[in-house]
Amino acid sequence: MDKNKTPHVIVCDNNPELNAYIRSAFMMDGYETHQALSATECIDKVKELNDVIDAIVVNGNIAADRSVMLIQNVMKMRLKVKIFVLADKNLSEEKTRIMDYGADAFALKPLSIETMINKVNSMLLESAMVSAKRE
Image (tube, rainbow, N blue to C red):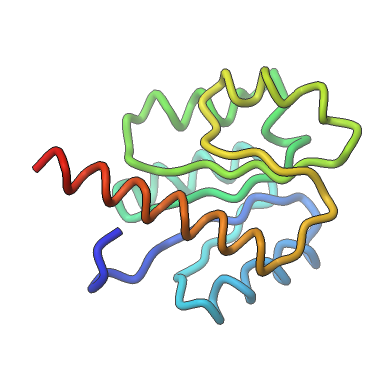
């Protein structure tokens, strides 16, 4: 993550209130945030913003939906976007499949907003360090 660049995150959750809450927390941490209320909206937003997006925080039910294949479709775009899946406990058995799709991190609710932001920050920092080593 370039220190001079504002990181961009798409929050993909079908609950508008939760989506707004998560986005406001990321905004307070210095992120530019974008809303998606479905997998299709998220894919469209990724296509629209392309290389600008650094991370996607996605609801586990949306990430596990086999009909849209959100994570796999984002991975096909070959962007350097990191994907963080926040899932309900009933999706714990789906973790392996979701990670196999290409998610970078998976956490079960309840999770504090501070912990979520720290995990996303860590993913982006780690990605930046790997990219810097390659250069």
